[in-house]
Amino acid sequence: MKEIGLSQILPIITLAIGSLLGSAQSFISDLFRDKRQDKREEKAHALEKESKIEERRSTLQRETLLNLQEKLFNLIKVTDLVYQEYDKSGWGNHVLNQATSDKFKNLQSEISILRVRILDNSLRSSVNKQQSIAFNLLFVKTQAIAKKLKKELAEIFVTTNEKLGKLLRELY
Image (cartoon, rainbow, N blue to C red; front, side, top):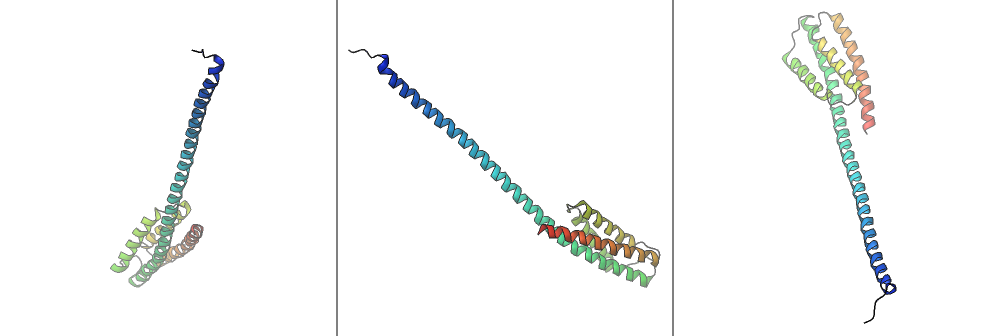
């Protein structure tokens, strides 16, 4: 039997080691590629989720502002009815028609619910001020004070409506 020398075994060992190293390199390369792919997919999923949340937030804000705009306009109309009723029944009397009283209370409640959903602090503050002035109109003792409050209410309504309109335009 012929002896096998190192010179004959060395190519076989080199081939085996090369094959093992190639397989290990391929395995490690695939592993890193998969991890990078997973990270990209996670990032894409997070961005998609964030985008959906932002879209829902924008939709809610838009709907809130549109509803609020209508309610604030109706509040102006109802406070005008309050003024007219007090003008007829006498200032300081504080007797309102039940329908007017109910409309006023319901609008104030609806506006309060919408107000807390507003993201913009300045608009939220303006709405709060408008509600407060309208509420104070219920308890006036003289027509002069009522006229002053009506003027303030009209001014804050214009300011609030402008802020509201600007925010709506930004959301479209």
